[in-house]
Image: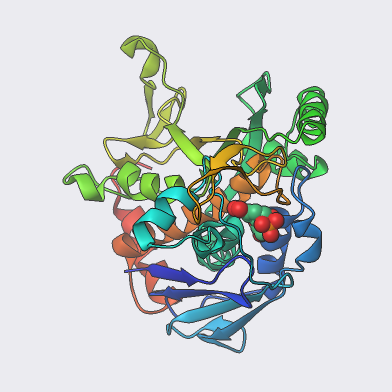
Length: 366
Ligand code: EPS
């Protein structure tokens, strides 16, 4: 079983992550983790906080000579902006109000510090470890921005390779320059007005074998396994797998059998049928809400006096859609690595490779 834990607050000294259950012998390149952390941090639409954080990380256990040992892997990320904040006016849309009531606090930062999306940084670091493992089996991930502030890209049929090549040339990870221009203007306008904007990001996984997840029980279904994890990313409010159209005859992907090779004419199912990966690309679209913290002050109340009050003027992100895509790639990788190890598991990489090859060799159709 692959599992992970995170700890740490937004302005605490460190974020901490532990990944347990990773097999021995997986090569880990720190540069690879660094690239992912940078991709999450460095998008336009973020707050000035992102300029302060260097995402300096260290792997403090579970590695020897650059390879995993099979022991829990602990990662720490040092925060640069360390401080203890105090504010007593809960922000609408945040965990502040419900969290303070539930835990018995008046200072909203007692909740907000942990609820903050800063925590996703360490999930990305752990996800990079899962990806290093999955790359041995030809499994890769990509995300791109498909909509911001109601402005959408026009075409949905871009290939994985095309997205991979193009997305980082845009600070919004949007592969259509025309849409990107309009999205950038919308973000700038929101910034001027002290507002924020949401959108949609698409995440894909390529190279999945047929047979991850299962139809036999609800909590073994692929959708169950990835759904909760993806919806746990702050600001993610909706999830669609594949592209559902409303007539069955159009929604089904035709099965094409050529000799002992089976292919699909289309991929509206987005890589999952009946709770099982079907060998096609996994395609998931996530709806990301506009971040609730606004520079524009909002009506609320003071927890100490219970009198009406305005929310504090806080530094904030304007749009986190591209960053949410990077987080989603890595969170998805953790879940898929878990499913993969349940199916082909072992204690070291070579053993998993043997199990995987033997499974593929014995499949009736390729
Ligand atoms: C966040 C508020 C902002 C964001 C933060 C998430 O931080 P601060 O309160 O320090 O201005 O910058 O995101 C990150 C720090 C990050 O690394 O993604 C929030 O309230 O969720």
